[in-house]
Length: 128
Image (tube, rainbow, N blue to C red):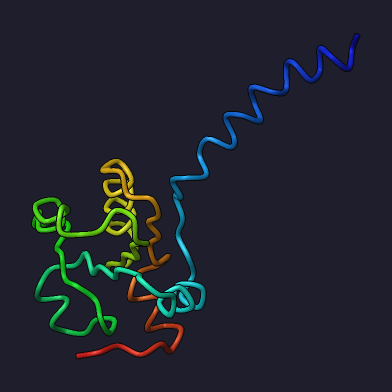
């Protein structure tokens, strides 16, 4: 009888834990983020200002300024079924952008922990 009660009480917890897997809330270190860049169909978003972007960015990134509202205004131009990798200078804006994209129904959104500053600090390439 105790085993049945244990099962009945733990089943809802297991169900709730499984329900969150479709929406990842993930930040990756530079090496892991770089590995994700090599995957097919990834969309790379630079959430910094156009001036910051012009000073150096990750190759292939689309500049959609988070603070300037550009990402919010153009969110429909991104494909919700493809992974989105997003970064900013230090990780704060990209974390906010990641949460926004998840709220908009994107399946997988990952941001760069520590932003482009951590990327550069790890000796990773920056395009100009």
